[in-house]
Length: 149
Image (cartoon, rainbow, N blue to C red; front, top):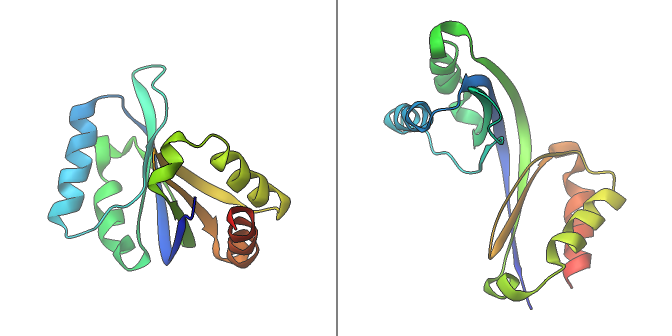
């Protein structure tokens, strides 16, 4: 296995707390975001346990003002927006990860060893993406890279 590691910087994490646990509402958020020309990358929905939930997603730092002008008005102001800007995304990609147990354990283990502040994790069969603070990026990247060599 020879994964490709890619990085992106100047990433903002938006977490919308107390949103309706309704796929129509979620679709509307991303339709409006797209209509503003904002590219969304990582998306994570908290497990639904009631009629309300939380939704997190990442955008480029440059698009923050556009998003906040919209999210501040969601659901008549009952939705709380939590914002974390200036982050970096580390993505590990390899089609062979699908049938290779332990890759996530290695990645998360090295991030833990370096004391990395992980803001968000998203995965698929062939990709693991971590959103980390800019201050933790160098040590996280070095640790992850050495774990996968």
